[in-house]
Length: 248
Image (cartoon, rainbow, N blue to C red; front, side, top):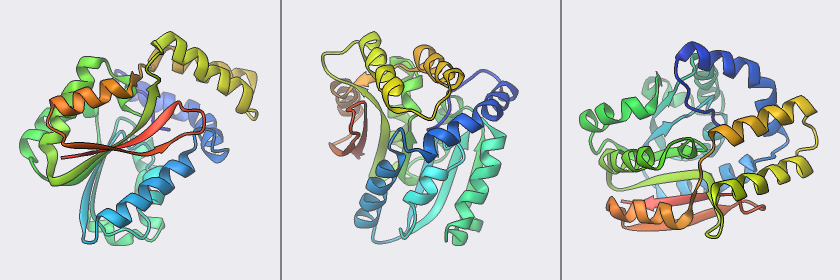
């Protein structure tokens, strides 16, 4: 679970610290099926890349999800971007303690808003990455911002590179309000370890910050910006989130 894009790093760090316990509880109980998404990503990366590959992780948070997904892969270079300096401090530990110590000299963690950094990054690092990963981050953006990000990601990918998008996805017959109502019903019924106050924190975040698209919309944007193929790697058990691989 990555965190929302907010205005101001100090505000973001405060939010990270205040919500850390809830964040850990959600992950440790696997409420968002991070384990299955991580296993699916690991399976793809180990089969697709036989040689060393580079990854850009947008909204990497503490990289706990990504570090597990990279175990036993041929990862040779990792760049993570996140607003929270507190999250990046933990990401540095997570990326080196799980048998990924070889990345020490090829590990770059950048504090900032990836939406603002992307145009310059795409200009200066064109065709620089084999994989761009976004995990539960894209849905915080407007449709216009999502299109800009997808366009810039295409420019950042090397030939035959892939964009891995793990995110919430509406069903074709759902509008935003219907999706959020369905998602929160699942939270109420299944996230049993949350206290009432923690539920309200989660519900408020989802209601104010989540703007998921349908799979058809994601496909349309991907094709518009020249991605040649899309593969569904994993769908969660409640059909509220998917892992999609977009091939350049």
